[in-house]
Length: 97
Image (cartoon, rainbow, N blue to C red):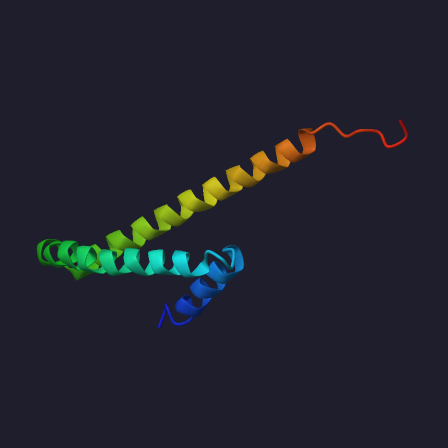
C-alpha cells in the first residue's frame, strides 16, 4: 500500500532528469541494480529476521531509510547553497561601460 505510486513516480523522475539519448541505458542500469539488490536483501533479511525478529528488522530498516533520506536531503541542500553562492559570487559586468 505504501509504495503504490512509487514505480510511476520513479520513472517520471528518471524521464525528467535523464537526457533522451541516455534514458534506455539509465533505466537498464537501474533494473540491473534492483535485480541484484533483491537477492542480496533476501539473503541478509532472512537470517536477520530469524535472529532478531521481524519487528526489529523492519524497525531497523525503517530507521536506515530515514537516515539515508536525511543524508541525501542534507547533501542536496548543501549543493544548492554552494550553487547559489557561486552564482551570486560571479562578477557582473556593467552594461553601461
